[in-house]
Image (cartoon, rainbow, N blue to C red; front, side, top):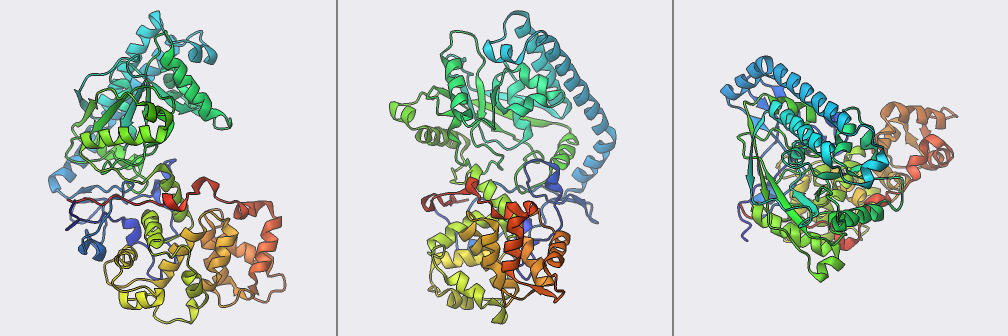
Length: 556
């Protein structure tokens, strides 16, 4: 495929990084309103009557202009600048939104009431032990219809179906992708209600918990070390049972994306080694007001913009049942990858080596105030291509950082000289473009060093990472003043805000000399329970060097 004239998807979060490269803005993002920790893009009404959720600096940067780009599936923006559309949103906010909210509440209450009736007299063990039958099965159908009315009330009036749904015996598992929104659950209520795989705590959610129980889900016990094996066993038992168990729906990507590519499938759906039916979701609407990604509008704003449209459409396509080969039965990752290719071809989108684990890395980078968290995985890959992850060049530059001049505006020639890399190296230009978020032709050395050291120490404990950063903020590890100490601890994560950092400084500076040493901080924090998190290694984001993400490059 040609890679010329490819547009680079850029996060506005990047554009808000401070000019001195000292991490991101410290203000918390509104996307804390959702549990996934996604960053937020502000929804604002501008003077020109536009609803702007983009705020990007440019569509292309210097790297893209050289013919290279990559897809970031975790970024989503909404741009509505048509005056008529903006006026419609506000008119419908007043006239239609309240009616829709009432309709959603009534639909949810109706589904809960039917689920309560249908599960009357059944224990949790009964729900897991045998499939519903008789009158309980009939009531379940009406509960699903009530939930379908919830989506109708929320503007999803039209669902188009393609393909032929398989029976539970033909395909015990439905593999669904792309997973981009809370709206994807419309699949569960659009036909015969399938089961889902859910956390055990889900059963305790008011209203929704009982409705989910009625679908006879397979619950995952997080505290149980054998949970994955038990889940696989339960799926296999249902698949091989002569009883009429519903199919199990699994969103194989494991996290929400923007549908520009299919990220790596988690192998859970494929471990049982049974036939699966791939199911793909499309939303052919004028505005995408419901995609809910790590870096994008928050759920409340998405709900607002979605429910102030006259209607929205959804398309569900059932692909032919995929029966695994013996090799795929033996290798769940091979099975998952081959099914993903089939689904990507049907969607006409590329596959990407991004995965759910990359969301964890990006979230950790954002929490630790590292610049460009949305690009940190691609930055890591580029550093690896330049052999900088194993090099000491970044730590050496860090040691003399405060003695260097003009570190905030390095052109590519100066940057190449500092990094001791040939100016013609393609990966150098790629790294420079990733760091040049404003497309000004200059980068901040501090931004580079923060990103590089984060990638190098991301599997270490926080205290080790902070020790590596000291020389970015203080010339001496033995005499760190209050301001330098506070700026350093910004990178310790959300548990150490500025106020707590200053309180800690005064607790260490018992002699009132105005400075402390890093060793004093390390020794003190190691003994305090409140600071134990500084010594926990991030095992959950460990990856082999060979698994560093190589994001897909495609043509327009």
